[in-house]
Image (cartoon, rainbow, N blue to C red; front, side, top):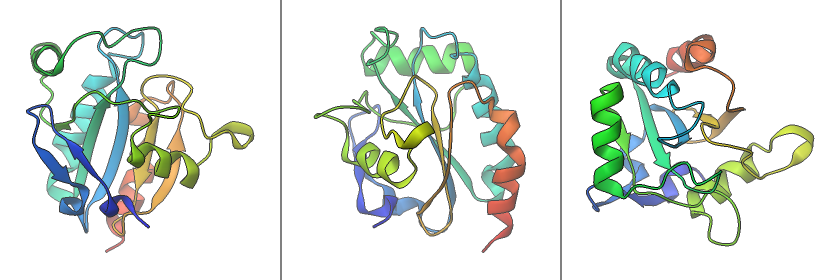
Length: 161
């Protein structure tokens, strides 16, 4: 299995197959518009702008499971991200990342890269998963890890063809 086995709906409601990202290094992040970590959108967009031409794709998955910090619908989320952070990377429809109704992609991500003490649950918004060019999870990062702090890991993955 890899991330290529999954699909998700983009903010405009279109079903996208993640196989579209075959051969790319992918950073998958569960996002929220009203979170203390929301300013990380800026850092994620900087990664996107800096490394997109080298093969990095940043994918944002809004989630409202943590303190009701993503209350908006798809059009509100998209407008917020664009207006406040100039987000140009691929954003998806709001999903659950934990529990029975968790999106299948997130069930795969969390089982492939458990967090501290082996727990699979996502602890908070802006948990990040780095995926290699073969669609396999390389590493999981906690919410408080800033996008700029994972640059060396991203560059290392980008060097591998």
